[in-house]
Length: 82
Image 1: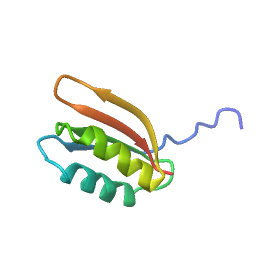
Image 2: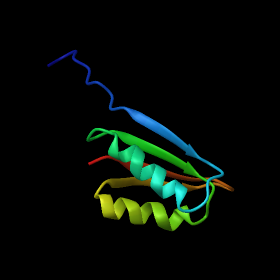
Image 3: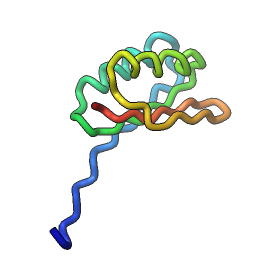
Image 4: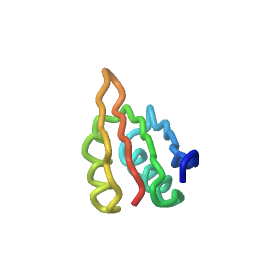
């Protein structure tokens, strides 16, 4: 329909800075479980092991890793709930 705007999908930011393994993966799993299909979760971590744990978690859950970014101290994951 012309002029009709689609509603943006919700995006949630999960600040897990300072948490150590296995907490970032566990909290990410819990957050994803409460989200609706199509929602986006942005996870920010400082634990270097999250670079392995979070992608493995997403492989297990079947959700989609849209983007991964590595800053000087922060790893950021953009995950879409499927």
